[in-house]
Image: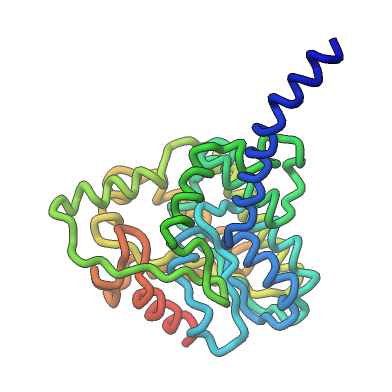
Length: 298
């Protein structure tokens, strides 16, 4: 029996070493989650403006265009659950914080939990941002527990593609070269990624948003709820196919303004933004982000 166990362990040892090495390599690849957490831990005391939200903020808000010390703490698919966690985590380290700019639009108010849509991102929050909800021994304790995401991350790294953000948390995007021929279908496809009629998610997300607004109100910190510019095709799809979502968003924003004093900044249909300011149907290019950020700062 002892001999069998010894042989089994010797057989498994190369596999264990290979898997362990792969996990170590994955964790050493630069990523926005670790980069942002470390920056906030070291420089939070300098901030006056903090940006939170999903990819609409990550690609659409440029801290370098603000007069005050500003940082972009957004990440792709970041839900209000994680926005609230990051606020709770870093507010004590930000004594000079005066304003929080939070993305609140169709792209996050109707999101399902990350555990259902993109569970590998839960692992990133657990490993690189100290999110306490998931334990080390759960499926969110190791990057290799999500094989497809790990493979994509390694491929991107081997190709030399950027996996991190700039020094202030912004990730630049290339401008659209041309509008797709099927302009309407292009907008519908993007809108369908963000909208659904699941009231369970919508109401739960709204309560989390109210929790964020109340937290900031108690601290005397100004909250700006922003809707970033989107293409005409995307906006038309929302208004045509997702009217309930549109009405629910408006009601939610109005309540935040009336109850918590939030400032509403709706740039979703701003005519100043043309197709060359976008990288796809609902995300700004780097130049579009510069234009938006200057408007907000001014």
